[in-house]
Length: 219
Image (tube, rainbow, N blue to C red; front, side, top):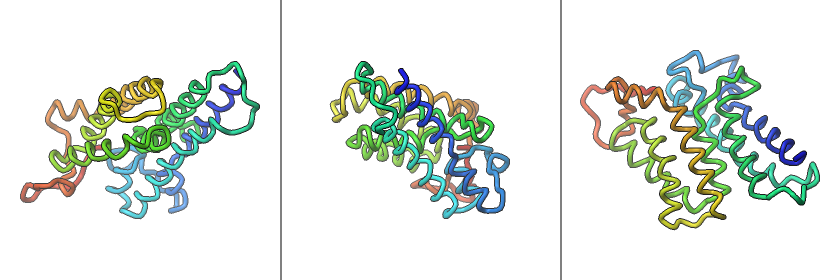
């Protein structure tokens, strides 16, 4: 239990390092949680601070997902022979995403978890990353709704597993379902606005833009 507890805690703490807020401090104390949609993620960073800032945010948020998974294989503390390895692995992966959503270093006000989930998935099941990105891109260019694209993408992951895309073991299916529930919940505001017809499109990413359309969003 000591190994599991220490590694999950370490993965959570790594996940709590928010790319938007770390770069914001370097940029003179910018906190994008008070700008735009108020979300500390890559889309709001792009909309309020520009491409370079957003690329840095996404790189950190995806990268810490990779680190969270790597923690499961760290030699310290010593491995507990009675502890199932998949519990340590998926526990660390999920803790990294939870840290991004509720970061202890930043008053538990984080992002929506998508970039960090992409990072852990890239390590755990790289074969499904490309089809997931295709789903996300297709929905974006057809609808312009970033939140909808993200939710549909995470919901597609368990389906891809069911369709036979190679994953390390059947435990990944339960992990993918847990991530889908978490990220759907973090995007509940987007879904409510979509239902109400008030969700704003990211028109510049769409295949066909409406004349005079705006380019903001609420992701």
